[in-house]
View 1 (tube, rainbow, N blue to C red):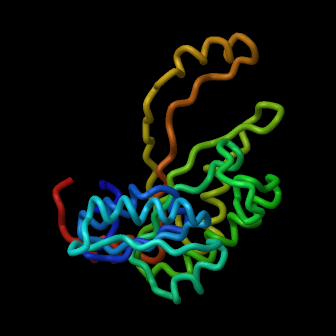
View 2 (cartoon, rainbow, N blue to C red; view 1 turned 120 degrees about the vertical axis):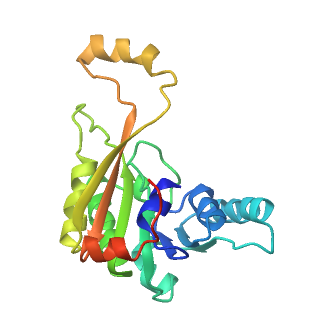
View 3 (cartoon, rainbow, N blue to C red; view 1 turned 60 degrees about the vertical axis):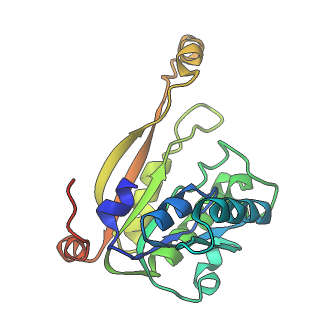
Length: 219
């Protein structure tokens, strides 16, 4: 909700290349934004549509999801330009979503990086000039326990796509069972518990012009 109200022009179109569940779409619709999400899994897309119908109804503004591979986002969206690029990509193999060979979570790290770069580049090309983008990412470890650097990779790929890193916020997630697990991991290998994700905000074009396009709101 904050990302939409802070970084998307009023009534603008939100583009989400890694749609996943229904939350980002439904919140966008409830706040008066258009939303177009790309989702690889048909069963997830159908669940999203059912939830949106139950919450938004037929008469309200409703989010839209398109089934397909986000690498083909230009064709899947018919080239529609967006006012805000907002997504939460798979954290590599932290959670495996399917065995589909197009699923980034089921790829090798090398293939993941190539596909991730293509999706960011193609999505950024659909973002209008003087607009913001935000990816929420967390890091993951390799087999030896070292961090792979997914947030840093995301910054690098957006830079290569022509956007600058403009803001970074820390999203503190629910602690849950981390205090119970952290001691064991720390004693075994000095791994500290991690309970946050990175909200990386980028700008395409002039941030001041992008700001003027956003309706004044109290922060």
